Length: 292
Length: 318
Image 1 (cartoon, rainbow over the protein chains, first blue to last red):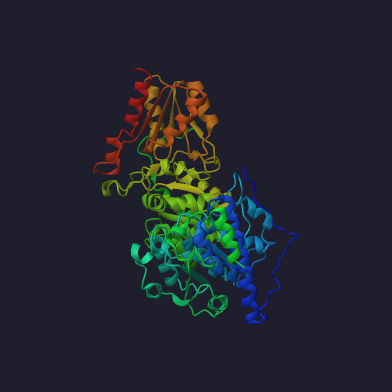
Image 2: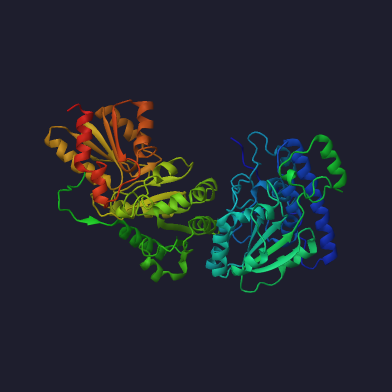
Protein backbone atom coordinates (compact mmCIF):
# COMPACT_ATOMS: atom_id res chain seq x y z
CA UNK A 1 0.00 0.00 0.00
CA UNK A 2 1.18 3.48 -0.75
CA UNK A 3 1.72 5.43 2.42
CA UNK A 4 0.24 8.84 3.00
CA UNK A 5 2.59 11.78 3.04
CA UNK A 6 3.16 13.48 6.33
CA UNK A 7 3.68 17.17 6.83
CA UNK A 8 7.06 18.78 6.85
CA UNK A 9 7.63 20.26 10.30
CA UNK A 10 11.25 21.17 9.65
CA UNK A 11 10.52 23.16 6.55
CA UNK A 12 7.67 24.83 8.33
CA UNK A 13 5.49 27.58 7.05
CA UNK A 14 7.84 29.46 4.79
CA UNK A 15 5.38 32.09 3.79
CA UNK A 16 3.22 32.64 6.84
CA UNK A 17 4.86 35.98 7.33
CA UNK A 18 3.89 37.17 3.87
CA UNK A 19 1.62 39.80 5.32
CA UNK A 20 -0.86 42.19 3.85
CA UNK A 21 1.54 45.02 4.47
CA UNK A 22 3.94 43.79 1.85
CA UNK A 23 4.41 46.14 -1.06
CA UNK A 24 2.32 45.09 -4.07
CA UNK A 25 5.27 45.12 -6.46
CA UNK A 26 7.35 43.13 -4.04
CA UNK A 27 4.54 40.61 -3.70
CA UNK A 28 4.17 40.24 -7.47
CA UNK A 29 7.91 39.79 -7.91
CA UNK A 30 8.01 37.15 -5.20
CA UNK A 31 5.04 35.30 -6.71
CA UNK A 32 6.66 35.42 -10.14
CA UNK A 33 9.79 33.81 -8.74
CA UNK A 34 7.78 31.12 -6.94
CA UNK A 35 5.74 30.39 -10.07
CA UNK A 36 8.93 29.81 -12.01
CA UNK A 37 10.12 27.39 -9.34
CA UNK A 38 6.80 25.54 -9.60
CA UNK A 39 6.99 25.31 -13.40
CA UNK A 40 10.54 23.97 -13.17
CA UNK A 41 9.38 21.41 -10.63
CA UNK A 42 6.46 20.37 -12.86
CA UNK A 43 8.74 19.95 -15.87
CA UNK A 44 11.13 17.78 -13.87
CA UNK A 45 8.30 15.66 -12.45
CA UNK A 46 6.71 15.05 -15.84
CA UNK A 47 10.10 14.43 -17.45
CA UNK A 48 10.86 11.80 -14.81
CA UNK A 49 7.41 10.17 -14.75
CA UNK A 50 7.06 10.27 -18.54
CA UNK A 51 3.42 11.12 -17.79
CA UNK A 52 1.45 14.25 -17.00
CA UNK A 53 -0.53 17.20 -18.29
CA UNK A 54 2.06 19.89 -18.78
CA UNK A 55 -0.08 22.31 -20.81
CA UNK A 56 -2.75 22.71 -18.14
CA UNK A 57 -0.19 22.60 -15.34
CA UNK A 58 1.50 25.66 -16.80
CA UNK A 59 -1.69 27.57 -17.50
CA UNK A 60 -2.88 27.15 -13.91
CA UNK A 61 0.47 27.71 -12.18
CA UNK A 62 0.11 31.44 -11.60
CA UNK A 63 -3.41 30.99 -10.25
CA UNK A 64 -2.28 28.37 -7.74
CA UNK A 65 0.81 30.37 -6.81
CA UNK A 66 -1.18 33.51 -6.08
CA UNK A 67 -3.74 31.59 -4.05
CA UNK A 68 -1.34 29.55 -1.93
CA UNK A 69 1.36 32.18 -1.44
CA UNK A 70 -0.71 35.34 -1.02
CA UNK A 71 -4.42 34.68 -0.54
CA UNK A 72 -5.35 31.45 1.23
CA UNK A 73 -5.43 31.41 5.00
CA UNK A 74 -3.91 27.97 5.46
CA UNK A 75 -1.31 26.56 7.79
CA UNK A 76 0.75 23.73 6.29
CA UNK A 77 1.45 22.43 9.78
CA UNK A 78 -2.29 22.07 10.40
CA UNK A 79 -3.68 21.12 6.98
CA UNK A 80 -7.04 20.06 8.46
CA UNK A 81 -7.58 23.07 10.74
CA UNK A 82 -11.36 23.65 10.76
CA UNK A 83 -11.03 27.38 10.04
CA UNK A 84 -8.78 27.08 7.00
CA UNK A 85 -9.70 28.44 3.60
CA UNK A 86 -10.57 25.64 1.15
CA UNK A 87 -8.98 25.29 -2.28
CA UNK A 88 -10.41 22.64 -4.59
CA UNK A 89 -8.61 21.93 -7.85
CA UNK A 90 -11.46 20.69 -10.01
CA UNK A 91 -9.14 20.12 -12.98
CA UNK A 92 -7.46 17.32 -11.05
CA UNK A 93 -5.35 16.20 -13.98
CA UNK A 94 -3.11 19.20 -13.24
CA UNK A 95 -1.90 17.46 -10.10
CA UNK A 96 1.79 18.13 -10.81
CA UNK A 97 1.21 21.86 -10.47
CA UNK A 98 -0.82 21.35 -7.29
CA UNK A 99 1.74 19.01 -5.72
CA UNK A 100 4.62 21.35 -6.54
CA UNK A 101 2.72 24.30 -5.07
CA UNK A 102 1.82 22.39 -1.90
CA UNK A 103 5.38 21.15 -1.42
CA UNK A 104 6.92 24.59 -1.91
CA UNK A 105 4.31 26.02 0.46
CA UNK A 106 5.47 23.51 3.08
CA UNK A 107 2.68 20.95 3.18
CA UNK A 108 5.13 18.09 2.59
CA UNK A 109 8.81 17.77 1.74
CA UNK A 110 9.85 18.82 -1.74
CA UNK A 111 11.83 15.57 -2.05
CA UNK A 112 8.52 13.66 -2.24
CA UNK A 113 7.82 15.23 -5.63
CA UNK A 114 10.34 12.81 -7.15
CA UNK A 115 7.87 9.97 -6.51
CA UNK A 116 5.19 11.53 -8.79
CA UNK A 117 3.22 8.66 -10.38
CA UNK A 118 5.79 6.07 -9.29
CA UNK A 119 4.35 2.73 -8.13
CA UNK A 120 2.55 3.11 -4.75
CA UNK A 121 3.38 6.81 -4.51
CA UNK A 122 0.99 9.08 -2.63
CA UNK A 123 1.32 11.40 -5.61
CA UNK A 124 -1.13 9.78 -8.01
CA UNK A 125 -1.91 11.24 -11.42
CA UNK A 126 -4.96 12.78 -9.75
CA UNK A 127 -4.89 14.15 -6.19
CA UNK A 128 -6.01 12.09 -3.20
CA UNK A 129 -6.88 13.99 -0.03
CA UNK A 130 -6.38 10.86 2.04
CA UNK A 131 -2.75 10.66 0.97
CA UNK A 132 -1.62 14.23 0.39
CA UNK A 133 -1.85 17.03 3.01
CA UNK A 134 -3.43 20.18 1.61
CA UNK A 135 -5.67 18.40 -0.90
CA UNK A 136 -9.33 19.09 -0.09
CA UNK A 137 -11.02 16.83 -2.63
CA UNK A 138 -10.13 13.89 -4.83
CA UNK A 139 -10.82 15.12 -8.32
CA UNK A 140 -10.16 13.77 -11.79
CA UNK A 141 -13.48 13.20 -13.49
CA UNK A 142 -14.45 16.70 -14.57
CA UNK A 143 -17.33 18.69 -13.18
CA UNK A 144 -16.93 17.53 -9.58
CA UNK A 145 -15.07 20.38 -7.90
CA UNK A 146 -17.69 23.13 -8.02
CA UNK A 147 -20.51 21.12 -6.41
CA UNK A 148 -18.17 20.15 -3.59
CA UNK A 149 -17.07 23.76 -3.28
CA UNK A 150 -20.71 24.88 -3.06
CA UNK A 151 -21.14 22.40 -0.21
CA UNK A 152 -18.07 23.83 1.56
CA UNK A 153 -19.35 27.38 1.16
CA UNK A 154 -22.82 26.37 2.37
CA UNK A 155 -21.19 24.73 5.39
CA UNK A 156 -19.32 27.92 6.28
CA UNK A 157 -22.55 29.89 5.99
CA UNK A 158 -24.39 27.41 8.23
CA UNK A 159 -21.58 27.54 10.78
CA UNK A 160 -21.33 31.34 10.45
CA UNK A 161 -17.62 30.83 9.92
CA UNK A 162 -15.43 33.34 8.07
CA UNK A 163 -13.38 30.93 5.97
CA UNK A 164 -13.73 31.04 2.20
CA UNK A 165 -13.83 28.45 -0.57
CA UNK A 166 -11.95 28.67 -3.87
CA UNK A 167 -12.53 26.30 -6.77
CA UNK A 168 -10.15 26.22 -9.72
CA UNK A 169 -11.87 25.02 -12.87
CA UNK A 170 -10.65 24.21 -16.32
CA UNK A 171 -12.49 25.89 -19.16
CA UNK A 172 -13.14 22.71 -21.13
CA UNK A 173 -14.72 21.11 -18.08
CA UNK A 174 -17.44 23.75 -18.12
CA UNK A 175 -19.03 21.58 -20.79
CA UNK A 176 -19.99 19.24 -17.92
CA UNK A 177 -23.55 20.02 -16.84
CA UNK A 178 -22.86 19.43 -13.15
CA UNK A 179 -20.94 22.73 -13.06
CA UNK A 180 -24.06 24.60 -14.06
CA UNK A 181 -26.18 22.77 -11.50
CA UNK A 182 -23.67 24.01 -8.92
CA UNK A 183 -23.43 27.50 -10.40
CA UNK A 184 -27.22 27.85 -10.27
CA UNK A 185 -27.26 26.66 -6.67
CA UNK A 186 -24.48 29.03 -5.56
CA UNK A 187 -26.16 31.96 -7.27
CA UNK A 188 -29.51 31.13 -5.71
CA UNK A 189 -27.97 30.83 -2.25
CA UNK A 190 -25.92 34.03 -2.78
CA UNK A 191 -22.76 32.34 -1.57
CA UNK A 192 -20.51 35.36 -1.28
CA UNK A 193 -17.87 33.20 0.41
CA UNK A 194 -17.21 31.26 -2.78
CA UNK A 195 -14.84 32.16 -5.60
CA UNK A 196 -14.54 30.09 -8.76
CA UNK A 197 -11.56 30.64 -11.02
CA UNK A 198 -11.76 29.49 -14.62
CA UNK A 199 -8.36 28.71 -16.15
CA UNK A 200 -9.43 30.04 -19.55
CA UNK A 201 -6.67 28.66 -21.74
CA UNK A 202 -9.15 28.08 -24.59
CA UNK A 203 -7.90 24.57 -25.34
CA UNK A 204 -9.28 21.21 -24.32
CA UNK A 205 -7.82 17.76 -24.87
CA UNK A 206 -8.73 17.43 -28.49
CA UNK A 207 -9.20 20.93 -29.89
CA UNK A 208 -10.05 24.55 -29.08
CA UNK A 209 -13.04 24.91 -26.76
CA UNK A 210 -14.81 27.21 -29.22
CA UNK A 211 -14.45 24.64 -32.00
CA UNK A 212 -15.66 21.80 -29.79
CA UNK A 213 -18.62 23.07 -27.78
CA UNK A 214 -18.63 26.85 -27.53
CA UNK A 215 -18.28 28.44 -24.06
CA UNK A 216 -18.64 32.09 -25.03
CA UNK A 217 -20.09 34.41 -23.99
CA UNK A 218 -18.65 32.87 -20.84
CA UNK A 219 -18.86 35.84 -18.45
CA UNK A 220 -22.46 36.50 -19.50
CA UNK A 221 -23.30 32.92 -18.74
CA UNK A 222 -21.90 33.11 -15.19
CA UNK A 223 -23.67 36.42 -14.60
CA UNK A 224 -26.93 34.90 -15.79
CA UNK A 225 -26.50 32.29 -13.06
CA UNK A 226 -26.24 34.97 -10.38
CA UNK A 227 -22.49 35.41 -10.11
CA UNK A 228 -20.39 38.51 -10.37
CA UNK A 229 -17.53 38.13 -12.80
CA UNK A 230 -14.01 39.47 -13.05
CA UNK A 231 -11.88 38.93 -16.13
CA UNK A 232 -8.15 39.27 -15.83
CA UNK A 233 -4.81 38.10 -17.17
CA UNK A 234 -4.32 34.73 -15.52
CA UNK A 235 -0.56 35.15 -15.53
CA UNK A 236 -0.54 38.60 -13.92
CA UNK A 237 -0.09 37.94 -10.20
CA UNK A 238 -1.05 41.46 -9.16
CA UNK A 239 -4.28 41.31 -11.19
CA UNK A 240 -5.12 37.85 -9.84
CA UNK A 241 -4.43 39.02 -6.29
CA UNK A 242 -6.77 41.97 -6.68
CA UNK A 243 -9.47 39.75 -8.15
CA UNK A 244 -9.18 37.40 -5.16
CA UNK A 245 -9.13 39.97 -2.38
CA UNK A 246 -11.58 42.60 -3.65
CA UNK A 247 -14.59 42.85 -1.29
CA UNK A 248 -17.46 40.50 -2.12
CA UNK A 249 -20.82 41.89 -3.14
CA UNK A 250 -23.41 39.47 -1.83
CA UNK A 251 -22.89 37.01 -4.65
CA UNK A 252 -20.41 34.28 -5.55
CA UNK A 253 -17.57 35.49 -7.77
CA UNK A 254 -16.24 33.92 -10.93
CA UNK A 255 -12.79 35.00 -12.03
CA UNK A 256 -12.20 34.25 -15.66
CA UNK A 257 -8.43 34.05 -15.78
CA UNK A 258 -7.26 34.41 -19.36
CA UNK A 259 -4.32 32.06 -19.65
CA UNK A 260 -2.07 30.42 -22.19
CA UNK A 261 -1.88 26.66 -22.11
CA UNK A 262 1.77 25.70 -21.63
CA UNK A 263 2.65 29.23 -20.45
CA UNK A 264 6.38 29.73 -19.97
CA UNK A 265 7.85 27.38 -22.54
CA UNK A 266 7.83 28.64 -26.11
CA UNK A 267 7.39 25.33 -27.90
CA UNK A 268 4.55 24.19 -25.60
CA UNK A 269 2.49 27.39 -25.46
CA UNK A 270 -0.98 27.36 -27.01
CA UNK A 271 -0.61 24.01 -28.75
CA UNK A 272 -3.41 21.45 -28.47
CA UNK A 273 -1.07 18.49 -28.65
CA UNK A 274 0.66 19.50 -25.41
CA UNK A 275 -2.42 18.70 -23.34
CA UNK A 276 -0.73 15.53 -22.17
CA UNK A 277 2.20 15.12 -24.51
CA UNK A 278 5.35 14.09 -22.67
CA UNK A 279 8.52 16.07 -23.35
CA UNK A 280 11.65 14.21 -24.43
CA UNK A 281 14.72 14.55 -22.17
CA UNK A 282 16.10 17.11 -24.61
CA UNK A 283 12.85 19.09 -24.49
CA UNK A 284 12.95 19.01 -20.68
CA UNK A 285 16.42 20.58 -20.82
CA UNK A 286 15.30 23.19 -23.34
CA UNK A 287 12.24 24.00 -21.21
CA UNK A 288 14.30 24.38 -18.04
CA UNK A 289 16.54 26.86 -19.86
CA UNK A 290 13.48 28.98 -20.64
CA UNK A 291 12.05 28.67 -17.12
CA UNK A 292 14.32 31.08 -15.30
CA UNK B 1 -37.18 -15.12 17.31
CA UNK B 2 -39.30 -13.47 14.69
CA UNK B 3 -42.62 -11.97 15.56
CA UNK B 4 -45.70 -13.45 14.02
CA UNK B 5 -46.69 -11.87 10.73
CA UNK B 6 -50.07 -13.52 10.37
CA UNK B 7 -52.42 -11.27 8.46
CA UNK B 8 -53.85 -8.74 8.85
CA UNK B 9 -50.77 -7.27 10.53
CA UNK B 10 -50.28 -3.53 10.77
CA UNK B 11 -47.99 -2.22 8.05
CA UNK B 12 -45.68 0.77 7.99
CA UNK B 13 -44.04 3.21 5.62
CA UNK B 14 -40.39 3.26 6.77
CA UNK B 15 -39.99 6.89 5.68
CA UNK B 16 -42.02 7.88 8.74
CA UNK B 17 -39.62 6.17 11.13
CA UNK B 18 -36.73 7.63 9.15
CA UNK B 19 -37.96 11.21 9.41
CA UNK B 20 -38.92 11.00 13.08
CA UNK B 21 -35.52 9.63 13.98
CA UNK B 22 -33.66 12.20 11.89
CA UNK B 23 -35.52 15.07 13.58
CA UNK B 24 -34.87 13.53 16.98
CA UNK B 25 -31.15 13.21 16.28
CA UNK B 26 -30.93 16.70 14.82
CA UNK B 27 -32.38 18.17 18.04
CA UNK B 28 -29.26 17.14 19.92
CA UNK B 29 -26.70 17.31 17.12
CA UNK B 30 -26.40 20.62 15.29
CA UNK B 31 -24.10 19.08 12.71
CA UNK B 32 -26.88 16.98 11.18
CA UNK B 33 -28.30 18.49 8.00
CA UNK B 34 -30.60 17.18 5.27
CA UNK B 35 -29.88 17.63 1.57
CA UNK B 36 -32.54 16.93 -1.03
CA UNK B 37 -33.55 17.41 -4.65
CA UNK B 38 -37.01 18.98 -4.56
CA UNK B 39 -37.95 15.89 -2.56
CA UNK B 40 -39.12 17.47 0.70
CA UNK B 41 -42.48 15.74 0.42
CA UNK B 42 -41.41 12.44 -1.12
CA UNK B 43 -38.59 12.07 1.39
CA UNK B 44 -41.00 12.94 4.24
CA UNK B 45 -38.86 15.95 5.23
CA UNK B 46 -41.72 18.41 5.83
CA UNK B 47 -41.31 18.10 9.59
CA UNK B 48 -37.54 18.48 9.37
CA UNK B 49 -37.95 21.58 7.24
CA UNK B 50 -40.37 23.13 9.75
CA UNK B 51 -38.11 22.35 12.68
CA UNK B 52 -34.78 23.21 11.09
CA UNK B 53 -35.44 25.44 8.06
CA UNK B 54 -31.78 26.46 7.73
CA UNK B 55 -30.54 22.91 7.95
CA UNK B 56 -32.51 21.61 4.98
CA UNK B 57 -30.56 22.25 1.80
CA UNK B 58 -32.83 21.73 -1.17
CA UNK B 59 -30.67 22.02 -4.28
CA UNK B 60 -33.57 21.52 -6.64
CA UNK B 61 -33.69 18.87 -9.32
CA UNK B 62 -29.95 18.38 -9.60
CA UNK B 63 -28.71 15.08 -8.22
CA UNK B 64 -25.05 15.39 -9.24
CA UNK B 65 -24.79 18.73 -7.47
CA UNK B 66 -26.74 17.33 -4.52
CA UNK B 67 -24.18 14.62 -3.80
CA UNK B 68 -21.21 16.92 -4.41
CA UNK B 69 -22.71 19.53 -2.08
CA UNK B 70 -23.10 16.84 0.58
CA UNK B 71 -19.41 15.93 0.27
CA UNK B 72 -18.53 19.61 0.68
CA UNK B 73 -20.76 19.84 3.75
CA UNK B 74 -18.75 17.01 5.32
CA UNK B 75 -15.57 18.90 4.47
CA UNK B 76 -17.05 21.87 6.32
CA UNK B 77 -17.86 19.86 9.44
CA UNK B 78 -21.46 18.67 8.94
CA UNK B 79 -23.20 15.28 8.81
CA UNK B 80 -25.40 15.36 5.70
CA UNK B 81 -28.28 12.98 5.12
CA UNK B 82 -28.98 13.10 1.38
CA UNK B 83 -32.64 12.26 0.86
CA UNK B 84 -33.81 11.52 -2.67
CA UNK B 85 -35.74 8.96 -4.63
CA UNK B 86 -33.40 5.98 -4.90
CA UNK B 87 -33.40 5.63 -8.71
CA UNK B 88 -32.28 9.21 -9.30
CA UNK B 89 -29.89 9.39 -6.38
CA UNK B 90 -28.03 6.24 -7.36
CA UNK B 91 -28.39 6.38 -11.12
CA UNK B 92 -27.90 10.04 -11.91
CA UNK B 93 -25.21 10.67 -9.30
CA UNK B 94 -23.36 7.37 -9.45
CA UNK B 95 -19.98 8.93 -10.26
CA UNK B 96 -20.44 11.47 -7.46
CA UNK B 97 -21.22 8.62 -5.07
CA UNK B 98 -18.10 6.79 -6.22
CA UNK B 99 -15.71 9.73 -6.24
CA UNK B 100 -17.06 12.57 -4.06
CA UNK B 101 -18.30 10.28 -1.30
CA UNK B 102 -16.55 6.91 -1.33
CA UNK B 103 -13.13 7.66 -2.84
CA UNK B 104 -12.86 10.89 -0.88
CA UNK B 105 -13.91 9.00 2.25
CA UNK B 106 -16.48 11.66 3.11
CA UNK B 107 -19.10 10.11 5.42
CA UNK B 108 -22.18 11.26 3.57
CA UNK B 109 -25.34 9.31 4.46
CA UNK B 110 -27.12 8.59 1.18
CA UNK B 111 -30.79 7.80 1.78
CA UNK B 112 -32.40 6.11 -1.19
CA UNK B 113 -36.10 6.70 -0.75
CA UNK B 114 -38.85 4.54 -2.24
CA UNK B 115 -36.44 1.96 -3.66
CA UNK B 116 -37.16 -1.22 -5.54
CA UNK B 117 -40.47 -1.11 -7.39
CA UNK B 118 -42.21 1.23 -4.93
CA UNK B 119 -43.28 3.51 -7.75
CA UNK B 120 -45.17 0.61 -9.35
CA UNK B 121 -47.10 1.82 -12.36
CA UNK B 122 -44.69 4.72 -12.97
CA UNK B 123 -42.44 2.11 -14.46
CA UNK B 124 -38.80 1.16 -14.83
CA UNK B 125 -37.59 4.78 -15.07
CA UNK B 126 -38.72 5.20 -11.47
CA UNK B 127 -37.81 1.77 -10.18
CA UNK B 128 -34.55 1.38 -8.30
CA UNK B 129 -33.69 -2.24 -8.84
CA UNK B 130 -30.05 -1.75 -9.90
CA UNK B 131 -28.90 0.24 -6.88
CA UNK B 132 -27.62 -2.68 -4.83
CA UNK B 133 -25.54 -3.96 -7.76
CA UNK B 134 -24.11 -0.58 -8.65
CA UNK B 135 -23.27 0.44 -5.12
CA UNK B 136 -21.94 -2.91 -3.95
CA UNK B 137 -19.05 -2.47 -6.40
CA UNK B 138 -17.93 0.78 -4.75
CA UNK B 139 -15.10 0.41 -2.25
CA UNK B 140 -15.77 1.70 1.23
CA UNK B 141 -19.49 2.36 0.82
CA UNK B 142 -21.65 0.60 3.41
CA UNK B 143 -25.10 -0.55 2.29
CA UNK B 144 -27.95 -0.94 4.76
CA UNK B 145 -31.48 -2.10 3.91
CA UNK B 146 -33.80 -1.88 6.92
CA UNK B 147 -36.71 -4.33 6.89
CA UNK B 148 -39.13 -2.42 9.11
CA UNK B 149 -39.52 0.75 11.20
CA UNK B 150 -37.47 -0.53 14.13
CA UNK B 151 -34.56 -1.37 11.88
CA UNK B 152 -34.96 1.97 10.13
CA UNK B 153 -34.76 3.90 13.40
CA UNK B 154 -31.67 1.98 14.50
CA UNK B 155 -29.98 2.29 11.11
CA UNK B 156 -30.46 6.08 11.03
CA UNK B 157 -28.99 6.34 14.54
CA UNK B 158 -26.05 4.18 13.48
CA UNK B 159 -25.43 6.26 10.35
CA UNK B 160 -25.41 9.55 12.26
CA UNK B 161 -22.44 8.48 14.34
CA UNK B 162 -20.67 5.87 12.21
CA UNK B 163 -18.51 8.33 10.30
CA UNK B 164 -18.73 6.10 7.22
CA UNK B 165 -19.93 6.70 3.67
CA UNK B 166 -23.23 4.84 3.65
CA UNK B 167 -26.32 4.07 1.61
CA UNK B 168 -29.61 3.50 3.45
CA UNK B 169 -32.44 2.03 1.40
CA UNK B 170 -35.64 3.43 2.92
CA UNK B 171 -38.88 1.77 1.79
CA UNK B 172 -42.16 3.52 1.25
CA UNK B 173 -44.08 0.36 0.35
CA UNK B 174 -45.88 -0.52 3.56
CA UNK B 175 -44.49 -3.50 5.37
CA UNK B 176 -45.19 -5.31 8.64
CA UNK B 177 -42.81 -5.16 11.54
CA UNK B 178 -40.39 -8.07 11.75
CA UNK B 179 -38.40 -6.91 14.79
CA UNK B 180 -39.29 -8.05 18.28
CA UNK B 181 -38.01 -4.84 19.86
CA UNK B 182 -36.05 -1.71 18.98
CA UNK B 183 -33.07 -2.43 21.19
CA UNK B 184 -32.02 -5.54 19.29
CA UNK B 185 -33.49 -4.68 15.93
CA UNK B 186 -30.31 -3.79 14.09
CA UNK B 187 -26.57 -3.96 14.45
CA UNK B 188 -24.41 -2.78 11.58
CA UNK B 189 -22.80 -5.72 9.82
CA UNK B 190 -24.94 -8.31 11.58
CA UNK B 191 -27.40 -10.58 9.81
CA UNK B 192 -30.20 -11.72 12.09
CA UNK B 193 -31.69 -15.19 12.31
CA UNK B 194 -35.39 -14.40 12.63
CA UNK B 195 -36.49 -18.02 12.42
CA UNK B 196 -34.39 -21.02 13.34
CA UNK B 197 -34.36 -24.05 11.12
CA UNK B 198 -32.14 -26.65 9.49
CA UNK B 199 -34.06 -27.61 6.33
CA UNK B 200 -32.87 -24.69 4.22
CA UNK B 201 -32.22 -20.97 4.68
CA UNK B 202 -34.19 -18.12 3.18
CA UNK B 203 -31.90 -15.11 3.02
CA UNK B 204 -33.92 -11.93 2.60
CA UNK B 205 -33.53 -8.18 2.79
CA UNK B 206 -35.86 -5.21 3.12
CA UNK B 207 -39.49 -5.77 2.23
CA UNK B 208 -38.80 -9.40 1.42
CA UNK B 209 -38.08 -10.31 5.04
CA UNK B 210 -41.72 -10.42 6.12
CA UNK B 211 -42.51 -12.50 3.06
CA UNK B 212 -39.68 -14.87 3.93
CA UNK B 213 -41.18 -15.35 7.38
CA UNK B 214 -44.58 -16.08 5.85
CA UNK B 215 -42.93 -18.56 3.50
CA UNK B 216 -41.22 -20.23 6.44
CA UNK B 217 -44.62 -20.66 8.10
CA UNK B 218 -46.00 -22.26 4.95
CA UNK B 219 -42.98 -24.54 4.60
CA UNK B 220 -43.32 -25.60 8.24
CA UNK B 221 -46.78 -26.92 7.40
CA UNK B 222 -45.07 -29.14 4.83
CA UNK B 223 -42.55 -30.32 7.38
CA UNK B 224 -39.64 -28.17 6.16
CA UNK B 225 -37.99 -26.15 8.89
CA UNK B 226 -36.71 -23.06 7.08
CA UNK B 227 -34.22 -20.71 8.68
CA UNK B 228 -34.88 -17.04 7.90
CA UNK B 229 -31.88 -14.75 7.79
CA UNK B 230 -32.51 -11.01 7.60
CA UNK B 231 -29.52 -9.40 5.88
CA UNK B 232 -30.03 -5.73 6.68
CA UNK B 233 -26.37 -4.91 6.06
CA UNK B 234 -25.67 -5.88 2.46
CA UNK B 235 -22.14 -4.52 2.69
CA UNK B 236 -20.11 -5.48 4.58
CA UNK B 237 -21.88 -8.84 4.49
CA UNK B 238 -22.10 -11.00 7.63
CA UNK B 239 -20.11 -13.81 6.06
CA UNK B 240 -20.14 -15.95 9.21
CA UNK B 241 -23.94 -16.03 9.25
CA UNK B 242 -24.02 -17.00 5.57
CA UNK B 243 -21.40 -19.71 5.98
CA UNK B 244 -23.23 -21.10 9.03
CA UNK B 245 -26.49 -21.14 7.10
CA UNK B 246 -24.89 -22.98 4.20
CA UNK B 247 -23.18 -25.56 6.41
CA UNK B 248 -26.11 -26.15 8.75
CA UNK B 249 -29.06 -26.05 6.34
CA UNK B 250 -27.40 -27.21 3.08
CA UNK B 251 -29.56 -25.06 0.78
CA UNK B 252 -30.21 -21.34 0.33
CA UNK B 253 -32.94 -19.26 -1.30
CA UNK B 254 -32.19 -15.54 -1.60
CA UNK B 255 -34.91 -12.98 -2.16
CA UNK B 256 -34.59 -9.28 -2.86
CA UNK B 257 -36.52 -6.42 -4.44
CA UNK B 258 -33.72 -5.85 -6.93
CA UNK B 259 -32.11 -7.45 -9.94
CA UNK B 260 -30.26 -10.62 -9.04
CA UNK B 261 -27.17 -9.64 -11.03
CA UNK B 262 -24.90 -8.23 -8.40
CA UNK B 263 -27.29 -7.77 -5.50
CA UNK B 264 -27.97 -9.75 -2.32
CA UNK B 265 -28.15 -13.12 -4.06
CA UNK B 266 -24.87 -12.52 -5.81
CA UNK B 267 -23.23 -11.36 -2.58
CA UNK B 268 -24.39 -14.51 -0.79
CA UNK B 269 -23.26 -16.70 -3.68
CA UNK B 270 -19.80 -15.15 -3.62
CA UNK B 271 -19.42 -16.28 -0.01
CA UNK B 272 -21.08 -19.67 -0.43
CA UNK B 273 -19.05 -20.68 -3.44
CA UNK B 274 -15.79 -19.93 -1.65
CA UNK B 275 -16.54 -21.38 1.77
CA UNK B 276 -19.43 -23.84 1.66
CA UNK B 277 -20.88 -24.58 -1.79
CA UNK B 278 -24.55 -25.56 -1.55
CA UNK B 279 -27.45 -25.39 -4.03
CA UNK B 280 -29.04 -21.97 -4.27
CA UNK B 281 -32.04 -20.28 -5.85
CA UNK B 282 -32.05 -16.52 -6.31
CA UNK B 283 -35.30 -14.59 -6.42
CA UNK B 284 -35.34 -11.02 -7.61
CA UNK B 285 -36.57 -8.71 -10.32
CA UNK B 286 -35.98 -10.05 -13.81
CA UNK B 287 -35.46 -7.16 -16.18
CA UNK B 288 -37.50 -4.01 -16.65
CA UNK B 289 -40.91 -4.45 -15.12
CA UNK B 290 -44.18 -4.32 -17.05
CA UNK B 291 -46.91 -1.91 -15.99
CA UNK B 292 -48.49 -2.72 -12.67
CA UNK B 293 -48.80 -1.86 -9.01
CA UNK B 294 -45.98 -2.83 -6.70
CA UNK B 295 -48.05 -5.73 -5.33
CA UNK B 296 -48.86 -6.87 -8.85
CA UNK B 297 -45.16 -6.74 -9.73
CA UNK B 298 -44.17 -8.68 -6.62
CA UNK B 299 -46.54 -11.39 -7.82
CA UNK B 300 -45.30 -11.13 -11.39
CA UNK B 301 -41.72 -11.78 -10.32
CA UNK B 302 -42.53 -14.34 -7.63
CA UNK B 303 -41.47 -12.06 -4.82
CA UNK B 304 -44.23 -13.39 -2.60
CA UNK B 305 -44.75 -16.00 0.06
CA UNK B 306 -45.85 -18.48 -2.58
CA UNK B 307 -42.97 -17.61 -4.87
CA UNK B 308 -40.47 -18.20 -2.11
CA UNK B 309 -42.20 -21.46 -1.13
CA UNK B 310 -42.08 -22.68 -4.73
CA UNK B 311 -38.36 -21.91 -5.00
CA UNK B 312 -37.70 -23.65 -1.69
CA UNK B 313 -39.64 -26.75 -2.71
CA UNK B 314 -37.83 -26.89 -6.05
CA UNK B 315 -34.53 -26.60 -4.24
CA UNK B 316 -35.52 -29.43 -1.91
CA UNK B 317 -36.57 -31.55 -4.87
CA UNK B 318 -40.21 -31.59 -3.81
